[in-house]
Structure formats: structure tokens, C-alpha cells
Length: 638
Image (cartoon, rainbow, N blue to C red; front, side, top):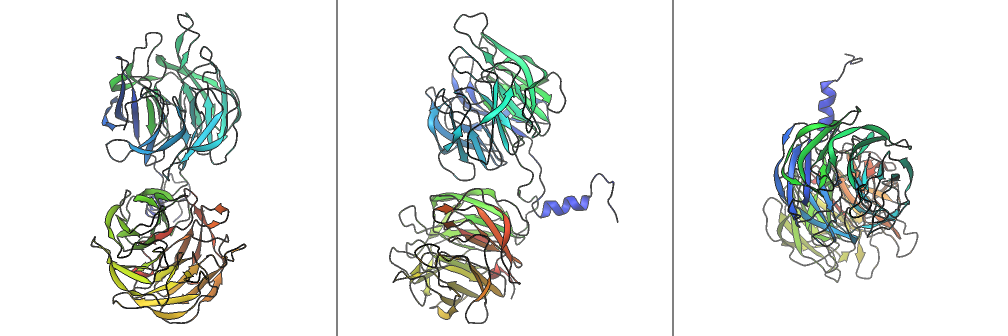
């Protein structure tokens, strides 16, 4: 039956929801911190539904009582980012607030410089702040999916603080600000969020404000309110009620949109898919904070209307939402009806150097990764195992060796919990397993290890000795399995040679490994993925000097011992990627080819041979990652 001319096909909606391609922006706005009538900084977070008029409600508290944050706190679908501010001194703190649950802020990292009024905007993955310490040209950025400190992005076109900022999925626009204690500018400038470099001129506002409030629906951007200040006692000192509008992808001067319900500056900006809210703020020179929440439809020029009230009158606060114009409908999103075994893959420890961040993908659906949560501690070189419902990361280093085992439920988006400890503290092991048992093999102690540990994935506790590999080795040998047999391939031996040896064990029993055969090329820092019958080892480090020779994929039949056969080539020569699979597809994520770390993901169809193809991108670059899934070969019927 044809669907031509129909508004929507409910079957198509269902398919998109099930394969994680459905995009629905949220409806939650947050107002973070601020300053009260008593000139007191507060840590209060208030929540406001964007679609519904009325009074806001209490959400939780920031880690610090602070004000002088940007009118706009950027973020992704999962969390809002409160950047800098004054406590009362300027702070470097970056903290996050999860939209999904009421509660407090969490420390995320630090700015390069202690600073206030940090304008910010983001896409799904990168947050950009077009301001440094005071009136300079610095632009910084952070990855929102990997905890860490701010890094240098480029330079603004001018030395201005107290800008407003907003944008769309690819572009940040910064507008207005003050270039000296008694002067304001009307300049707009822009950067491309995913391309490091300097800002370029966009055009001019119709007025010259400091602290304007930015909002966007992803196509149009508005700047509203703000302050002009010409010095103490000047009759020209005043707040604005202006609303200006631009088309984000078309440079040029702003057009008049309409007016706010009153003159206001340092109000919080909250963006929805169509509606903009301007909450709180103060008049000038009275500095009387207000509770008013203004609303206007970004697509239709006109004056704002009263939409409700904040619980507390405040100004110098920051606004955030999970529906702002920078959020990209093209990225994979959490499934509305996630089902165990549907193809969820986790990449554990994303980022460089050691990092706690975990990304997830939907293996059947091409696209970029999405933030899942965090390990209990930042580290790299861990081994990964998983069941149908639970993911585990074991061992690693940062930089000291670590024996901890972390775990998380696959169905939840959130942080890991402490599961237990390995029998031997080590880094760089292989991981493999079945539906019930996970095995961690080899690694550094710091000497090369032949130890194989096992855990019962459903029951938290310490690992138990399983047996030994045929030869001690480390440097991330690859691990893969069917439901009955686990195979470990490659790694570095005691003589520092990249090994071509493959061992196998029967997962349900204990005992020492048996020789399986040889890889087509000896190498370390490889990964393994599998269906129920075929195992595939990809990439790796084959010699200790350029060109490394890791551009290789080979395969085995898991039930039959013998040497590996050439499968094809990855899209990028590299070592240390993570591997994930379901019964049909294997995905390889991240990796390194010195001096570069990569965020690329490529994939193969396991049952055939041939070169890998592009899958999407991780949220950040990373090497020596580990990957797990809810549908790998060890979880499938042979």
C-alpha cells in the first residue's frame, strides 16, 4: 500500500523508534544558580516545562552557589553544563546536571581560566565557550561525552566579555558584549562547532547589549534583552527589552523581532523546538530581580507574553534545555523500547588520556555514538565482557595498574557500580565470555601474565582463577567467543614480540588454554568480534615502528582449530580499537596510529569477507578501548 501524500506512516515511526533513529527533543528547561534581591549567590536549580505555562518547580542544587554565569548553559540530550561564574570570586568549575532525574550538579572538569559570564553553545558532543579570562580573544571547548578540562579552540574577532551565544547543530553565534568597562558592542561572530579555528564576522545586532539572552530553534536564533552601561550615575545606563533575530546559516545583520514584556538583563534563556523562554533577570538601574518568565515563538515575529513565574526572583542565572537548537536529530538516540539482545554496543573508556566515559551505539543502525555514563574511575587498557543484560570492564591503568571490576545494566543510561576485583591486578588483558560467564585473560602485572580469570556476570564478586594461556602475553590481545568456546589471539609475548598465537578454552569449564592456530599476521592491540560461528580479529600493532602494518582483518571458524584467513581491510590503519558485534555485523571503534588518535567507527558483515565501511563517529578520539554488546557471539545459539 502506498503512503504517498500521507502526513505520517505509523509503521515508519515504529521502525525508527525500535532501531534508535527516532529523534524527539525534550521539553525540559532548567534555570541554574543566580543572584537574589539580597545580592546573595544561590545554588538552586529550578525546572520549567517548555510547553506548559505556569510556575517552575525545584529540581536540585549546583555544587556551588554562584552567579554571573552565561544566560545560556549549553548541553546535550542527557545533561546541562554550568560553566564558570562567580562564587563570589571567578571560578574554573564546570559542572553537569542530568535532565532525567531531579538532583544536584556533578563536577566535570575545569576551564582554562577562572571566568564569569561564559557564553556557551553546543551540538550533541562539543561545547564551545567564546570567551576567556576577562577581555581577551580566547575560545575554549570541551567534549561533553568525556570528562576533562577545557582546551583551546581558537580566537574571537574581538576582546569582549558578557556575550550572548546560541546557534544550530553546526554553528555557534556569539553576539554583543562589553569591550571596556563602559562600552558595549553590537558585533556578531560565529564558529563551526566541530572545526577548531578562529571566529569570523557574522553581522551586527540592531542594538549594543552586554549579557543578551540567546535562544534558537535550530534554524533561527534570537538575542533578547541585555544592558547598556556608560559608567556610574550615567542616565544612559539601562536594560533593554529588544528581541533581534537572525537565520543561523545566513550571515548578515539581525532583524527586529519584537519586545520582551519588560526591560531586563542577565535573564536565563531556554530554547524549545519552537518556543523560547526568557526567565528571571533584573531591570537596571534598580537591579530588582524578577520572577517573570517571558515566552515567544521563534518562528513568528512578535512581542513576548507572560508564561509564568520562577519560584525565586533572581538574575545573573543561566538557562538550559534538552531541546535547544544545537541538538542534532541525525544522531543515534536511546531506544524508546530498548530490548536486551537488540544490538546495543558499549565502548568503555572513551577519550585520551585515560577516561571514565562510556559511549553506546545501536549496532544495526549506522550513526554516531551517544553518551551512556561513566566507569567508577577513569582508566584505559581494561578488558570487557558482557551478558545479555550486563556490561563489565575489568582491570586497566591510570597510570597505576588497577584490579577493579566495574559493571552496569545494559538497559540503563547511567554510571557503573563496583562489581569486585580481579585475582591479579593487571592492565591490557583480553576479554571474552558466554551468556553467564566472563573471562579476562593475560595482561601486564606489570610483567606479562598468562592468568585467565572468570566471573559469573549476574553475581557481583571477585574473579576466580580459571587457568592459564599457552604463553604469557599482554598489550591487548583480542578476545572473542561462541556460546561454548573462547579464543584469545595475538598480543605481545615476554620477548616483546607481537604474537600470532591463538589459544582457546571451553568457557563453561576451567583449565589451561589449548593452541588453536595462528593469526595471518602477528600483532598486538587488536580486537575480536564474533557471530555464533565465525570469529574476526581486526587491526593491531604488528611491528614497533612505522608503518605498523595493522591494516588487516582476519577470521576463523570458532568450532574448528586452524589458522586465520584474510577477511579484508579496515577503513583506517590503526591499533587499539574497540570491537562490538551482533549476529550479523561487527563494529570497530576508535584506535590510534601514532601520532594520531581516531574517533572513527567502521563495520563489516561477519558472514562475508571484504573491506570495512564507515559506520559513524565516537564522541571523542580514543585508543586501547574495549567494546562489549548485548548480542555478541557468546550470547548466540550455535
